[in-house]
Image (cartoon, rainbow over all chains, first blue to last red; front, side):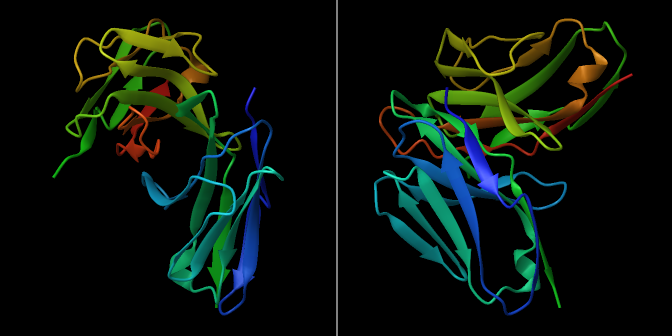
Length: 112
Length: 114
């Protein structure tokens, strides 16, 4: 059974600081997704990571994937208030790529 | 622009009533999914479909059913609503057929069962 965990679940960070959100998954998968959700809103796709060693960057966010460690990271550089949101990682079964399982989410609050 | 729409956006119902949440996508995607979102649980997969006439159970399928009669629609039915089914429900779709698996979400339907 595929399970996805995230750490931390809650994160309060100051503007301008750097931090990393960790995502671990339990079984073999080489597809990892990151989504953002603003309060009361839907989910927006941030990154799709499709192979070991994949790294993608968009603005102050950078995501990476290590399939051997079953670990993905979302690194935040020089945080700004607009990044405050809940971030979800999700993974799909290697035998059923289209079935996507989500982690519990990391609630990020960036404070001045 | 292609989109995925859910209705109703908000619904209040009583225990024991049948409820249907609609999901319609214009992406022409093969795959459609229903998730529920509850505090502390992230999104949990209820049912999913890889194409017309195909439906599969997810992690939390008890008390829910779906049917897929065309590419565009995957309605979610609660046969006899229970208070434990109070939640926010998200419909999503993905292209399928060996694509990336990236999901595109609807705006969500907030259901309250009294």
